[in-house]
Length: 301
Image 1 (tube, one colour):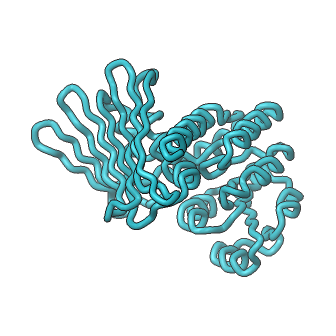
Image 2 (cartoon, one colour):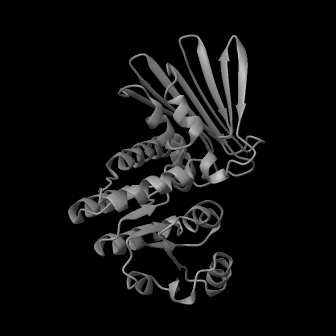
Image 3 (cartoon, helix red, strand yellow):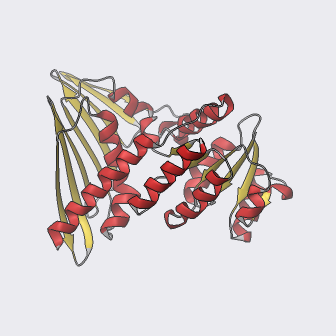
């Protein structure tokens, strides 16, 4: 199977290439416009010269069976369009695009061409979070915080808060009938953001503070007098009277702990099986992000 990786930045090098490079039966092709990065990464993975590409045309000429897109978000629409038009099943880092119109167009293009399009919401595959899906979920609370990193609202919401939005959508136990947004914006920068989703018998809260003094991600689900807490995707604490702690094993790879390995393998298995994956559900997350963004903009208008 010929698999292309487009964009060789931190996320590709730290998370995806360590998985892809060691899968049996994979002929890995790399593409980036930066020759020095291409040479360094390809040398480290022992990728031969004929599988190194500095332009997308060269990569497409390799007749790929699948592609992973890890280029900057601003470049996603053009790259993903080219891949889908070439009939290449495509896995792309979240978000599909900064503009909702572009995301809609890409999902519709994939459906028109009957080509797989998957978006990298790895938390849906992270072991700690999938265990939360099996727990009572009357109340869901997710915090994803940063240190000294207020940011322009669209960039922050689509590049980072989207993980919170998608995780809440993944975990809510029923239809959402109420959406509430609270935010603090100063000098055009988003400092913190709170999203509440509510439905029959449940409430879900997503919080991001970019001036929190701590880089952390904490998920809690509770109900029926029990609580499950996941700290930084690595430590699971069950509360029922006395807390019980389960930590990630010392030899568990970070990519597996964060669900990236599982997401990659699920995508590749679907490609091998000829199963076409739809990005419609991922598009619903993008639509909710746009709704959050509009609410933030209305509060600061």
